[in-house]
Structure formats: C-alpha cells, structure tokens
Length: 180
Ligand code: HEM
Image (tube, rainbow, N blue to C red; front, side):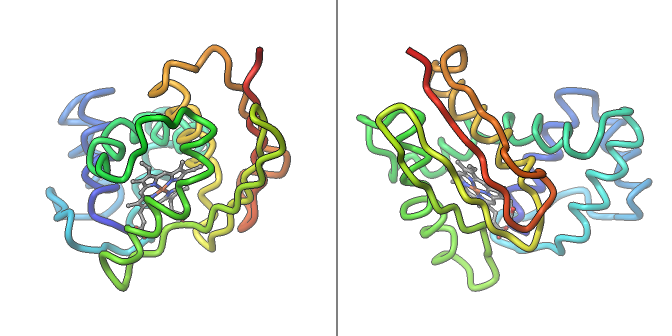
C-alpha cells in the first residue's frame, strides 16, 4: 500500500493519541520503520498488523478504527490531489468521480499502486450506491472516507451512509443519500 496512507496513519495515531502510542504500535506490530516515503509502496500486511494492534490497544474493533481513520484521511488526500477537483462538485459528485479522477491518477503514478475499484451508480441527484471491490477487504475504510467527504463538503448532517453488505468482504455495497 501507498506510503502516503502509512504516513497519514502515523499522523492519525500521533494526533489522536501521542507519539509514544505510535512507537508502541510499531513495536507491537513488529515493524521498525519510523518514516514512510510517499513515493514507495509498503506491504499491505504491515497495514493489517498496525490496524490490528491499534484495535487491541484502543479496544475499538478493526472496522471502527478503519472508519475513523478513513474519515481522518480525506482532507489530506483532497489537498494532495486538489488539481483534479472540480469546484462545482459536492459530496455525491466527488464520490461519483473518484474512480475516474483520483484513483485513475493513483494507478498511473506507480505500477504497484492498486486502489480499490469503486463503481458508482447514481440513482438520483440525491442518492447513489458504491460497489467497492478490493482483495484488501477495507470496505470500512471506504465507509469512513465517505463520511470524511461529507464533512469536507459541509454536508455531514445531511449525508446518510449505510453499508448494505458486510464491510469486510471483497465486494462491499455502500448506499449514500442526501437528505432534503
Ligand atoms: C481525494 C480522493 C481520493 C484520493 C486522492 C484517493 C487516493 C487513494 C490512494 C493513494 C490509495 C492507496 C492505494 C494503494 O496503496 O494502492 C487509496 C486507497 C483506498 N481508497 Fe481512495 N482515494 C480517494 C477517494 C476515495 C473514496 C471517496 C473512497 C471510498 C468511497 C476511497 C476508498 C479507498 C479505500 C478503501 C482504499 C484502501 C485500499 C483498498 O481497499 O484496496 N478512496 N485511495
């Protein structure tokens, strides 16, 4: 997985907890790297271990942690890829275009990058569903990222996010609705 995601996980742990929590987490996961390079790709297994150990340390479930981390990730990712954003988009438009803009760009940057496939079906101006497909089984991260998008666009109180399948599968369907 992309070094940026690891860097943001490190920052998440440091800001939500503290630096020593991050050091303890690395130790518990049996990892020695203290910094991750945003141009490098690291084994997915390291991310699973870090999230798994973080779940043990905080008492939260891995799904809850993925969701919280996904929410946290969004502003930084949006900042990094801001050139690809259309200023007219709000939450649902952004979700509809992620696959063909952000994730397409991520795939082009590095042969080893492999973001999930997000097939979006727009049912109406105010409703869509996302079919998430990835062998990484990180649908809970996707759910958190949708919430993060809603906050980014100041629509958090109007956007309803509901996984309609288990969040842990290789295929996860997420329904997103904007309330009037
Ligand atoms: C600004 C918009 C976005 C950017 C720049 C972005 C970028 C990225 C990058 C760099 C990765 C790592 C890929 C890799 O290591 O191979 C990734 C993974 C991921 N992205 Fe996105 N993404 C964006 C929006 C979204 C949205 C809206 C969702 C969910 C609806 C999403 C879901 C995920 C998930 C769940 C992963 C983890 C890897 C996996 O499950 O296979 N992303 N994304």
